[in-house]
Length: 386
Image 1 (tube, rainbow, N blue to C red):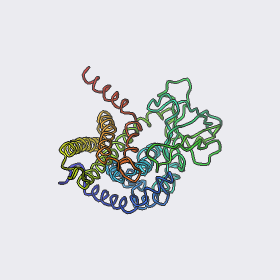
Image 2: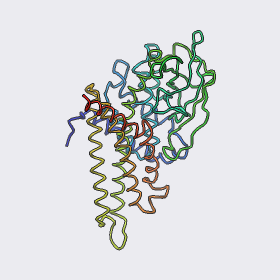
Image 3: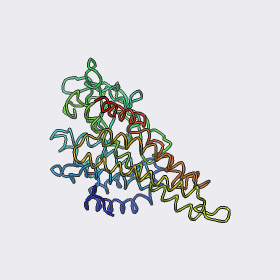
Image 4: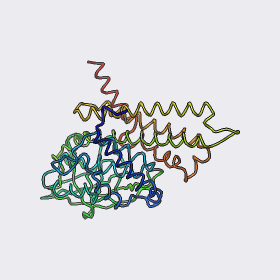
């Protein structure tokens, strides 16, 4: 049955992405896990196929699509069973580069956007710090004006695409006297800029094919023309972009959950114990069926939220619901999938073992579940008060 939310164009993109994942990702993903990053040529292939410019306006050379295309992309890369690959792509397309697409000047767009869409320049966004994550107003990296440049000092932590990226969109405090939400500016920082370095590559439990870094800025001079958007208005652009980030993480999580369930349904039908397939155990088939129902319900919430976003509706509460629900649910699903794989679910050669490690961060990254629940409470509490 077709969906009233997605069009034939979305279906074509989905089919093309699925074919790409089957042919170019799944066979090679384990090697990328060992290497710790996704090869650039793979990302460039995605660029050639137009996957990296789905949300870029047509006037700028992209497909000009909306949040529904982002969800399709997130679901199909999520199905790969390699969360590190999926997040490498999604940070580039839906979490970092949108800062340039939305707020870049004509000069900035002309200089950087073509390479972003082809995969020649991979992007990262630097907001999180050792002492500030979802609390964006609490960041401490400073940028001080010095003639025709700004001098950045500080550090960023847990930055996806941080090791092998080319272009970084960095949040820094530019007005020490103003409150946090009115003192942050976004900057474009190119790889190789003097004073900017990768402090260290981070060794993670999951998402191992995603390169993640601590970034260090020590008297890093950034040209004033690399201010992205308005000075001291960066907080608002970050918060606006959080909605897309959280939506695609939710979509990716539910795609991973569906694929893990598919693999587990397949496994319990083949694995015998006490003279019969595991599928014959009522507790197993009912638990998996319940999880599938929960995942399908969460997926429908994500699709509806993407549709709301595409209509221009205020859907912060729905995005927060989708992120909190999906982040927790994918972990519950993977727990059960590993359990029903038995010992096989605890060895590295099994996809669900890798997926269980990848899933854990889904309830943390992009806004922890507890932060999302507070966002929901604030909005519904106000509605009750009104």
